[in-house]
Each structure stands twice: as C-alpha cells, then as structure tokens.
Length: 71
Image (cartoon, rainbow, N blue to C red; front, side, top):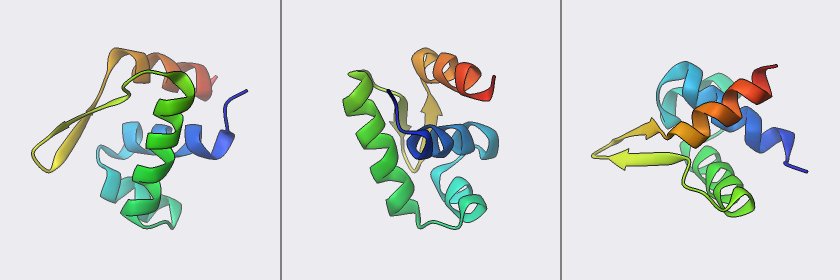
C-alpha cells in the first residue's frame, strides 16, 4: 500500500505546479517534498517527475496516480 503522505505531496505538486509551491502549501520544505516524491518513485518503481531546468513536469504515470488519489 502506498503512503498517503507521499501521495499528498505528489498531488500538491500537480495542483500547485512546482515542488516549491507544493511545499509552501503543505507547510514542508522543498527538500522534504522532493524526498517524499523520491520515496514514492522507489515504491512504484517508476519515474513520476521529469526534471527540466529548475522545474518539474508530471509523467503520465504520475497523472494517473494523482487521479486515483484524488478519487
């Protein structure tokens, strides 16, 4: 079973558009959100965020996971 806190971090990134904004919304540091996403990537054995420069983009798998988490 996936950790709800990690799913919440991923969902916050999808809603707010960046790790930094998600961290602010959740009351975490950007590093803590990144660590939660990294752990979730290891648990799911898939890449969830594509890093590009200073930003990130959700992969298709991450979008599916966010849709499931939202429901």
